[in-house]
Image (tube, rainbow, N blue to C red):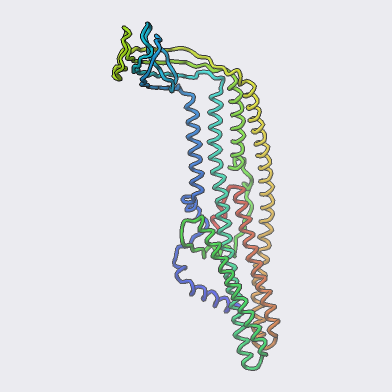
Length: 459
């Protein structure tokens, strides 16, 4: 009876001390995640990385298209008579001239413009391998983003669980202080009536002051946990009272048939795509040692300040006169003979990098499977502990109520009552610690199985 009265009084006090919070929208873990995913800068960084990888893939694909280059020049200087047309690469200067005995020390203006078309039509699959390697990098970026989102979900869950844990510890410290305050008041009354020695009043007061100090410490820890959570969540205020009740009274989790490490786990897929990238890049590097066949085409137009009779003009506008057009078409074969050995060695290097990455993937997969099996075993046993700690709390609270009545009646001393209170506090503390460990295990398992539905729906 006394236990029910104490619990009712505590609940009424809590409700009266937080009237505004009760009217606010309550946030659950599942409701926090969409806001975090939409606004957290780390998510934006990975999205940009995915877009960058996509642009790189498109850039590599463009190498398979014909390459068109154009240039235009306007120069002023001396010249050497040189008939004919040619197609210099961009950055080379052209000085036009004519045959004859024209004084080459004179100065004149000249213009030149050209466009060249080069299409690598056959490269023994090198360009295709480069394109496939870029595609693997793009897929890897997507998988890395998914892996990061999983880690962020786990991080958010752990910070939320820690906030609920410190909130429960704060309420636990408040309950302890109230219990000691009740004992202090009872002892003070009994001491004033001469039924208890004055030392009992001092001891009860000292215990109460220590409980207040513990409450202050727990309040600071709760505020720190809240700030850590708000680093991820974009809001300024958070009402988690609904989750606080679920935290201290968790529901049982039963292993599902699909609770296993998926082959398409983002972390494993990222390593697989990294291995593919090294392998394809190595093949492309080896094929760089083979020749490439190109189709060539070009058109040029040039003008000179020297006319057909060899008359030289130093006027700038005359450099656009006496124009001549030329065209070019042909086939080119390019073979880097000096790079045969170098490209082969680099190809082998990349092949070994792919092999190393594949080994690391297998190692990581085995570690994930072992962690999942271990967490499943712990979760089952952890919930069994929770059931026992919950029962221990109920029994301790009932026993404390009985001993408090006996103390008021003068049947037991203060030291005995304080010892019973310590047993009750220890039982409550163990239950809070067990609840925290249970939810943390579920958060870790959710990251391993890529399934946070249970955690988001029940916390």
